[in-house]
Length: 443
Image (cartoon, rainbow, N blue to C red; front, side, top):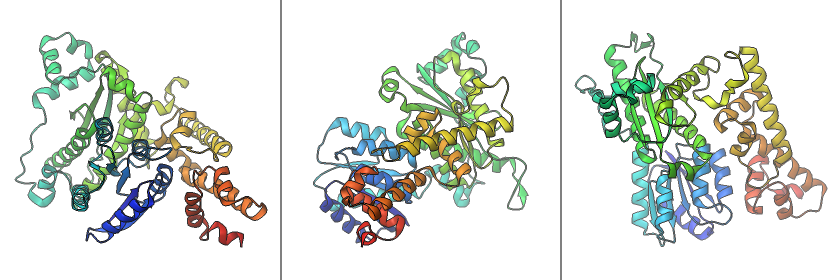
């Protein structure tokens, strides 16, 4: 069963869409509603949401900004955008962020439910190619090397860029692939396929090929939505992805590109685990300009994967998180532990000072520590036992409880002081946290 979040700054629209979904006969477990982007983001952080249905123009945080933050929090959440304006720019931005549909108000009930139904159906099923061998047709499924004429030159590019860039035939292949950049990043997917048992027997060569093919299929399906990329097989049974940006698209996203790569990595891990039941390890390089740096990017992605040996319960690693320049050699376990503690300590200090700031995000806290939100969240939970956002809410709730019991401040004033943009949003969080409303506590 699926959980759906409906977001609109008009409460009547939220109520109408919720009622429509509740009576639709779709396989829905919970329907959540929110009247602002901030309220919706808290819901996404705290609840298991599968589908986000959001208006595009809402007060302080637009639907586009909500999608961006939701991608960072839980990149596998799917989105349908609704808007009162048939604006190409909005539609283009929504599609670029992976929106599954863009519907214009006033909504046609049948069209809306069809859109939701289509998204939910696709969400619960792998691609047709992957479904073919998952359905037990593996023996008759014909495995083909993806881009066989290109895989060799792409792997050569990762190993020795100069040799390929100085070779006319190699350059012709790169031109056919439209590998122009000029900005590039490399992502590697490592599947846990050693000589371990599967159904009481070791992985056969064909088993390994099928699982690898399945992972490549999942990667391509995710990448085709919003990335200019090429995915192919690499040595050591890895899958390599080359992401590229032209000058315009790179500048448009600015520093947010690393966050998007991190979200893509988590989405890759999530979907490989969902459909193949494997904990794939994902290594993500930095972003560099020029094909001549492909060997560097390839080495970075491989090195990032190696950190799974230190963090065996974590699966997505960004090379830039580890501050390699601070160490003459790879850091020891003790050095790694010391740095991890320092990152968490600084994040905790920043949150303690800024938890009441409106619009505070995990991305902002991570940026102050020069690490990705994903890695910071992992370290914070590992070191403190709390999810990072749960810690923010804990501070806000404890502070607000003190004010309710010991001051005459009104609800809207308390909400303002602890970082909530509306008293209604504050009350929802307070009741979820303490089990009673602020007014009930006051009495």
